[in-house]
Image (cartoon, rainbow, N blue to C red):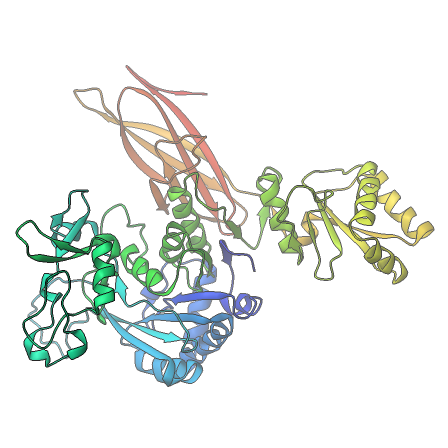
Length: 567
């Protein structure tokens, strides 16, 4: 399983394909056992099917449904890894006792975090309530082993720096005065080993210094102990050396997402600050984060920002595609590439995909391992588990010369393996392409019949199903115009697809070089209005169908005395 991958499908089946002990952190926010239709968030077929599966037998069935998935999660965790399971009051006791304690062991329980979703006061009602208002969720933290790395502090936020570190030295480094912890207090009792004179200073009380003499001198040389002009000692705690603020198990400083740029329209969306804290608590840069219930995509979006590797799975097409849009929007020159695995793919997208990315992706889909070197590889792009070479051609009607070159490369790459495969009447290699010319097919047949050399020709469609992508058209209606000449324009998109349309997304400042950056990620109706000033405007709409396939329509509008659509 390659990292930085979004996967559409049943997480249980996909979990079974992931190698053991390869993941550092698992965060899962499974659908809550609330027996409410609002648990169907996106409404597409995959999510509805999953909702029905976990509900058909009540609480016991729900716990069994979740347990078999957590068992696989335990297997893929590294010994130093941990799991953070997010749930609410409906099933938290059953989950902890019936799943986590049994699979991870009571001894590996680390914490029960209470997340207070909001701080708003409960509204009064004329009707008497039989229960207290629910404002919190539970996050159960379990380690794989006692060697799990879980950090129990958090970084100081930007708006806390001046409060925590109010002073600055001559170099502008922020610190706070910690001189109160230079000497031991008298009520700590006599400590003869810490009673000494240092540079003419000593504690008059028998409790002595806080640090050994060697450590005190070391801190002085580092600039953390300062002899001030008035002759007094000052102990400094600098911001860059601060380990963080200790975390308790009540997290009431992170509110739920209700409005703002972060909001994408997913009712169970978790705030990025919450996932940032969790990921920093349990991983370092380069570690792998796994989310088997992607939902609105917060986990993988934050992991990507924090330079962690990640894998995300969801049964909902909308969940996967909205997450893809979030990742696209936050990407820059330093972002690592990522891939999306769907049930079907369209020819145009695959045919025009970045060559190296396509090679790595299709080799993986075929069950092989891609060649990371990309240069000096004799034109071989990967290998099967038994080391048999794979070559990928992102082309149609592959010609006869490809066979000659491939045969020579395979022999040079590993002559011993080549001879063995010929003797055993096994393929000496595989060539993957969109289609093969008649001459190529004939040459492969000749090699097999006359020289006992088997080369397997594999089309892309043999590996992944290819479908027709959707189409979209856009109607433009001028709604209003104000005194300053600003026009209010209505855009109405109409998509067509044999699979059916899922949703639309809009980019009102589209730039082909920067790619599609969604201003509106989830539009079920395909209708938007925008106020445009005089000038040229480029707007793009993306349509996504039920298979996850997509198309983009770009609209160029010239707004002046009139509104004109240009080519």
